[in-house]
Image (cartoon, rainbow, N blue to C red; front, top):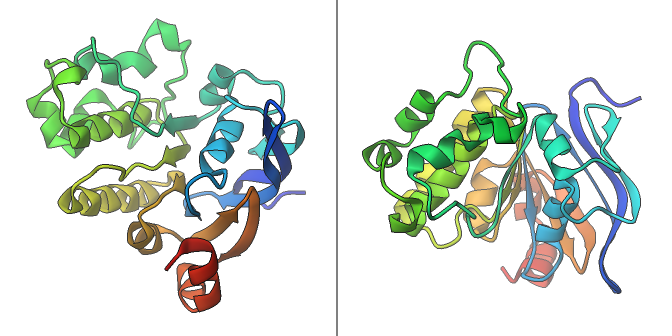
Length: 245
């Protein structure tokens, strides 16, 4: 029986793209109210892991359980309705919609009621705009006119509008200036304080080590190390061999 605080359990999953064997028996756990980071070089399977959990590239073997329920066979929108939100790599905002329209998508009838009301502390449009003042300034501008950093804020804000318990973040700091990276770290810590869990795929080693409660190192589709950031920092061989640090 899974521990009561375990939100997500990935057990021995094997994921393919056609005949390409990408994830080769990956297991990890995401407790409630924690930030778990996945580190690894490019092409090691990190994004595939996020896609497997979100139902976009389902694994052929192994199990993924969310709150004790198996996600196998569920469509991505069904998985989202259970309280999992995705901040995808590359932001994937809708360029022909305004900032406001992008943010309201999870609450629209098209979302099928995936936005979840948790009562106190619920993310509303006003709460998101207060968290991201730049978005408030550009509320009525089209997403295509935003800078890269502003689009990343929009992608995170859109995910929050679904009021998820678990947020999957795939390379959220990609292309951001150092000041925005620091702001992103503050946002993630704030989300954890509010009870959200985050599974973070990140190339920015310093950011991941600064915000994560536990880290996993993924190499060639396999987990080769997991522990606390402090424990990983002491593993010079792991840092050099698998992360190039």
